[in-house]
Image 1: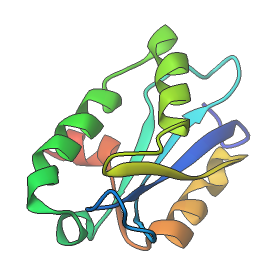
Image 2: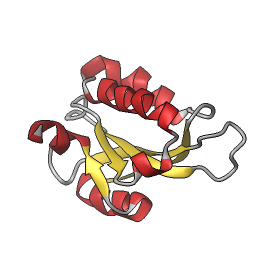
Image 3: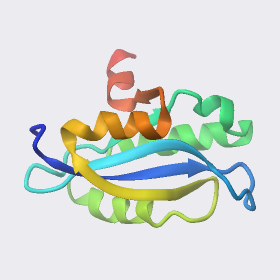
Image 4: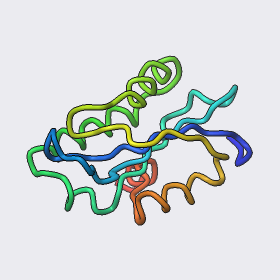
Length: 125
């Protein structure tokens, strides 16, 4: 993947309550578009995720992000479509967009502030 690749991203917001009107941005999930796409999803989680999430949802969210992180190839298209359509439950699609891969860190910082890149977090553990 080069920095010139275009990626598509989804901002996921967290709502602890089904009727919460202003969910908090929790994660940005992205994938590279084009012939070099199909690699693992790029997942950034807000550094404050554990502070904003209800304790009953933390294990679920951790397992969900970990399962997404491991998907590649043909599994990505249907999964990414589902992520884009999330509208109920604790995670909701809040914004969909695209940018150059090199600009993704700026998008993530603008939405989440400090975040954890799950690709780096998993290689460090």
